[in-house]
Amino acid sequence: VIQADSWYDWAALIAIEPSKRENYVDQIRKQTKLGAVGLLITFAYPQEQMQGPPYALHDDDVTLLFSDGFELECLEKIDLEDDKDRNLTNVSSSIFKIRRINWTKIHPNIFSLYDEWQYQDNQNPRAANL
Image (cartoon, rainbow, N blue to C red; front, side):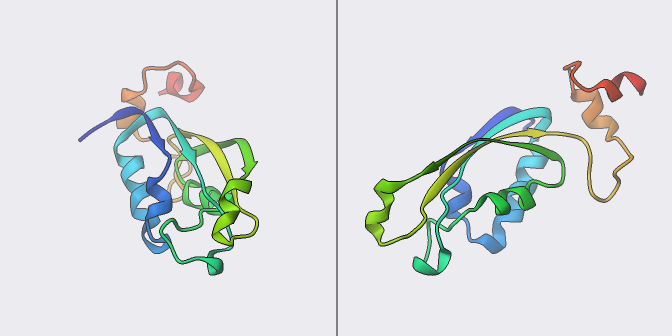
């Protein structure tokens, strides 16, 4: 199994049908090390104005998709005037820094010992208590 330290997504998630995006995020979760950092660039517009791909990916979608096992930071949000020639309104793009963490919705107080063992960085104060 690949255990990447970092990842970058400029066009993959927006090419996936919204109903299948959780599978993509699960793969990122499985194939990244604890502490791995990703950079995600979104493309958002009113979905009813165009059939994808690209499919709209709004900031709220990103927050929901990456709510389990990740920390999110929106670095920038940009209005994309250039893409309005597709007859779309409110076209924007956001850049997210996404860091893999060890908490999960199912077991919020249990650490994955495998992930903790792999995590070589001292940024996690809880790792020292294992």
